[in-house]
Length: 110
Image 1 (spheres, rainbow, N blue to C red):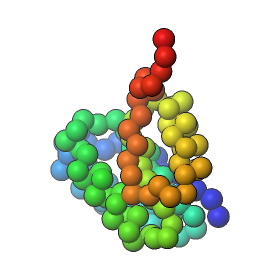
Image 2: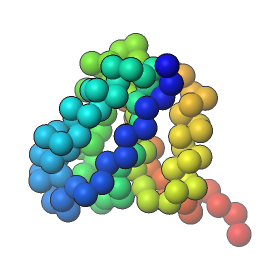
Image 3: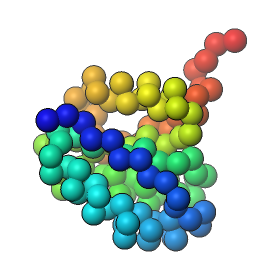
């Protein structure tokens, strides 16, 4: 088995509406993906701090439910940064229940 990557798109801008849409539309797909994978990474679109609580709760509860399989999320819109975070998570077997925020600019040198 390998890592499943589930890209989440089209969430509403309001946090409560986004959470409701995620749990209704994406949670079943996440559970299905976990049934045939060692780990799952959710790739979430960028969002402001108001979305952090529901996103973290979703990732942490999925990780608890799936243990010993891992569940993490990457939040951001920069493809190269997302790819780098996916590679990091692939080589970090102890990391689970976390959200990595990537923007493609942090840590870059001029």
